[in-house]
Image (cartoon, rainbow, N blue to C red; front, side, top):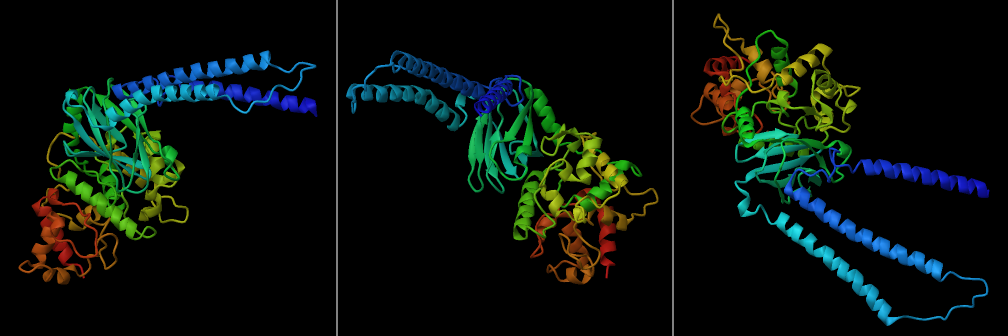
Length: 482
């Protein structure tokens, strides 16, 4: 029995040593999420503070352990020793061992409080022009809003080197935490309560970010990447985010994928936030999607989702889980749970309303969508026209509807996201005083936020980019629906 106990203790000791060695490797400066290989002044100050506290702790540990060892050897019980004198206190000793820890704690507290105050008191005035970004936490992805430049992106953060960045942190659902280990500390993202953090990156490169507060099923997979650029490269990236992607050529995988995306994905994912006014529209649309989901979490076909503008320039998918390429994107679209458990996309989107929860699409259709998404990159800068007018001048309005409208509107009376289009001529005729049915439908397509039908979320984007002739053809088609 004694040998078995000794054997178990030896096994435990070996496991402990192995675990400790692997833990130490996780703290190496080169590790992607190590706090020791710093790339910014805030992370550096926090690392230095940790080293100071750790050094003090080591000195205290050595002193205490040395005293214990000395006392254990010096005053160990020997054969023939009598019971030692019993004492009930030593005032001097008790005062000493109270004062010394208090002094140590004060010595540790002073630099800690100075660091907290300097980092929570906003960006110092002498740090240069501040870049303001709002970071919003969602289950389980990050949204980044550049209010200074009217840019919105998701899961990949771009900032300039050497320039202070001030973050307003919020959450749309539960408590998350914003953390970029090599550049700055971590701060909670709390619903209905804004927190703030600022950072400066000293090195150009790619860095890892992570949610550091348990937030549900896929908390461990709620990640993001930070790309630090030289100032001119950052401004070039901003310009690219305002440059529309080139429209796909007819009869290609991209054009087929665009139609499939519009029919199955566009009610939750925006993919064209490049034009003036699209920034505010996207924020309002995201809020409307969220409110629609909150009203009926089980049956809503809408939910907040990552903005996919220029998605083809991203390096990862699934909030930083896998490298982005055609193969991984096909896997993600077909069955998101195979990569990331618990996505609301798979639970809410109608295309996943199948027995096994996988996309109700053929392999070819999924491949076309992936090809289209990967093609979303800054284009030549030409005006985006979604549907070119054919050479014979005849616009296929039914195809225009299928490509751009069918994701949210049925041709009958069924409600998807917006109202069904069956019999819209009669309903639109007296909707707004002074407007005919034709004029009302036209205005609702070009400026949908002008006339919001009660009971429906204000999530429809404007379609002026279709061009007057295409919109006119679409209106005439809708007026024929019974």
